[in-house]
Image (cartoon, rainbow, N blue to C red; front, side):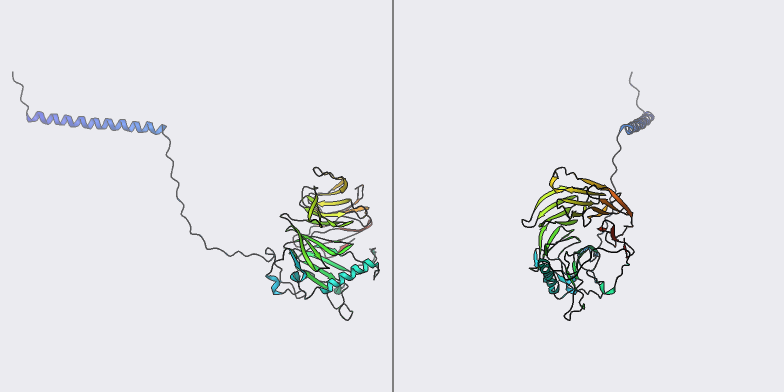
Length: 410
């Protein structure tokens, strides 16, 4: 029997069924792919997000930095009492070895100062004293200040003041915050013999704050000074020359001289005290005496092997130079303050030490027992515009100190 013939109706039914199968298969495959993507998203790591690029701002035009005269080591414009030449404002402190004329400021000549120093040393060598000097002060007599006894020596804040150790004249040397050394001959007279001269000579030998001045009684023509820049300067009055005999990368905070050897200098580098020989230009010894900076070094007037040091760590310590271990130095005695100690000085007889501290106390201790004899309350908060107070012990029963009220207290 022959197979039935395909009709047109059968062909259309077959095509419809085929299209339905294709559509059903696509839906099934899409469902499977959708389920696969959902399962894969649970176990796949999130794609890292690309960081957004910040819009780069154009560089601003360079600004001209304003620097003060103090930061540049330049002197300020002083008052009319001590006019400063215009040329000195644009120059820097010289270095190495240089004559007086290169460092001279606010004066035409340093001849009066040199002549006064020469006469003072000659009178000392000959044993002659032109005037009697009474070191004792009667606290019952009211002190007075006359206008003719006031001089503006240097501009800016004075950081150190010393009297030259001469009896025939009253010569004061001071250093300021900018590196200037000012000399005032209080007994200076003019050509007519009257005190018509101010007696002031100012030099500019240092590049920063003057931290110490030392003059040996038996070598008046050599004046040593130090600064925070790390320079040790020798002022030779006889040769009229300045000489930077030592320069360091570390600041020098204090300076002292051995009473029996004018060539032996003691410098405070941070918490260390170093012995410097001026003849060889080298350090002889070094000791770590404090944790913080050493503010003062003072020798006993009767025993050159004994020194007293004050430090910002709050201690005043007594040392014997003959028995100090270089590796682990140990002091003989010490006195503790609650805050930094600005100074510690022996009395002229050596039987007492007076120390001034930022804890608003002045302590008087016996020597060598180092027992506190008296504690005096005193306002030592000088602020940023005044230098730290440093008490001076004239006698064991008489002490003098300035205060922030422009007066002297006993």
